[in-house]
Image (cartoon, rainbow, N blue to C red; front, side, top):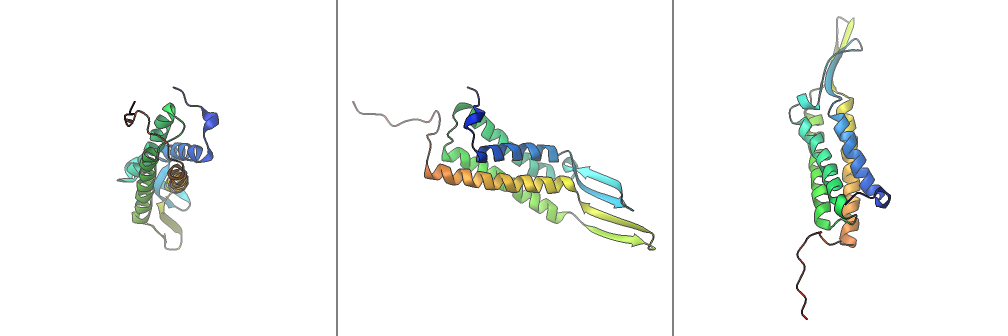
Length: 160
């Protein structure tokens, strides 16, 4: 049972790549402060409260898709629903975390300026979440039109 990457569509690739990008964003600065254009302090997703859970859900959606694709390239609607829910909740948490981070700027006696707020990591996680939700939604829509069979699902008995 190996993954045949040639049979993956753009939607599957979008989900997998967005999960990888979300994983990288976990280690980039999500919040920080700078003085006179120089970074004074910054923290990554692991230090932003529940921010790490947001990106971890995006990563989990990709990992789940990867595991499901190991057996059969055609995904049943139930599996795609799990991917869509993980992606949507992850994106929602990124949006909540971005909106709840304090932001501001100012200057001290007109000489030194300071600024604090969200940084590149949370923006990358937001973009990855948007891409993943769109791809998962399109995959869900196509799986509802052309439903697959759940692997290892019990089948109805046939009468001889």
